[in-house]
Image (cartoon, rainbow, N blue to C red; front, top):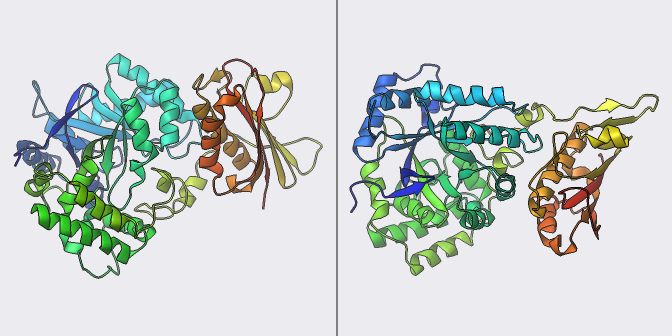
Length: 485
């Protein structure tokens, strides 16, 4: 058996295939008292001494960055541990100054001159400034402030959009486990085509995927944030009995290989080609399972094992949507539960204005350079009906997003349309008609698939037209009608 974790390479960085996740620092500090940084660094040092030298954290994981910074300070020269952190700003203008400030705060808290991997999270894709943020981060990477850029909780469509728009992404951190298998679908396929790697979190479902819970009764209440979050995933996947079916199958495989259920759960994730590493939570000084975690590298799942797991999966329900949807739409499978109040409070990119002299009418502008020139609005609401103009993948006043990529442009356009409707008091569920105009009729499928991702359950009336030449680098234009209520 290996005495240290397997290694892999990510964007030139030599990393462990088991990352130490520090999100539980926030849970340990939820009473308001920060952990002692030096004591915390001592706990991390024990992981480093055992070969677990790659740490994952975020700006909102309590004092995790500060604790890690104390660890890194112990290595003023030569090889040191790697610190992967995240920046999760509230939606709003992502100017060069805003992004630089966010990155500098990470540098200051970690006490370093360069962030090894900076991962970006965005709450609502309806606000397009996420692209500005990523492009500004790319500039700071070129300046030497960031080694590699990643994202967290991006679905396949928006990861593809970022890549098509030229953002140099190395990784995407998403939920991936025997319970939540969404990442094994389109996202993994995209990653294998593009070389982006996945970091899998939630691999043990907050500890539920372990021998302790095999045959156990369903818990009536849960005290810690992490486990309460993953109980929601279990419920969404079909409930406690369906989850027990997965544990039974995993237990049989574990006994066969003389390992733990947790080892089987982690091994299953690591064997997916798109996965660079799994993230195992570390409660500093508590419940450390380093020796057991190393056993994941001492066996492999054979065809019989995989078939046994697939049989158990067949008794469960798929987690709704794509990766990251749990943060952006119901069901909200998060530690906090329903996030609708938080999302409703986020600023809209567009501002509705009443149309002078026309009671019951309002409109929004998207800031396109052509709206005032040609004399039109992005969308107009008349009583309960919202009409959205033909919309292209124009970012800001005049930049074409993802030139030449129909699927990526369609994704961007539909976000823009939904944002317009939301600003006028509607919702995506209110859309009753869409029309898609294509430069090249042969590109109907990527446009259709992107449309289906948004409207698959809503199913509005739709028309697709081969429009021939569109202006500039635009491959597709879409208009929509929504009826509120």
